[in-house]
Image 1 (cartoon, rainbow, N blue to C red):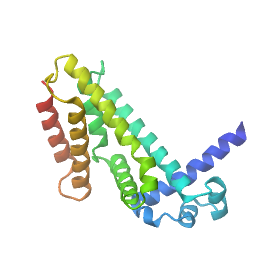
Image 2 (cartoon, helix red, strand yellow; image 1 turned 45 degrees about the horizontal axis):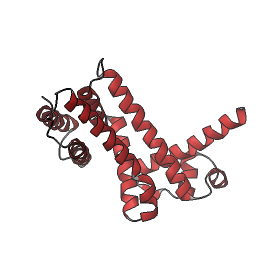
Image 3 (cartoon, rainbow, N blue to C red; image 1 turned 180 degrees about the vertical axis):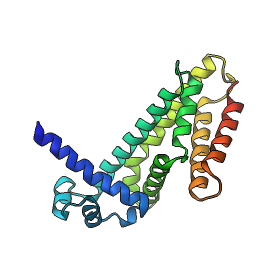
Length: 198
């Protein structure tokens, strides 16, 4: 049992080294050798735990998703009780906006992955599922809000969820690019949610 825990800790150490490189330099700089140096381990050890770079990329991507999920859950818990559809949607979208060091790191790292997948269709097929799952979850929350009379029943919940996520992603890019700060981005999101919910 101890060996298993140690192996998982080593995999985590290596994957998080890749995520740090992705955040600060982009994935084009994340060679197996660079990851080994960042993790403070030998190249041979990286190759032992991850026989291919794609395997390492996908493992690290899954860990990034877990980090974002934990942030979303924290924001939902802090949004108050009961967790109404509006509170859940607001918490999730707010958690994604790059308004603090944690969310800026997560957004930059996702951007590094999206840049990578544009040039690698095989990897793209393996990393695009996460946004689709989130979009589906948001659509479910919007349908629940419609059932509760909080959103116009005539709205297409799927389209609204897709639009909200696209807007938040665009706002995130504008924050990282220096067009606006996190506070301004949050004000825009709040405005649009106020128009959507009654």
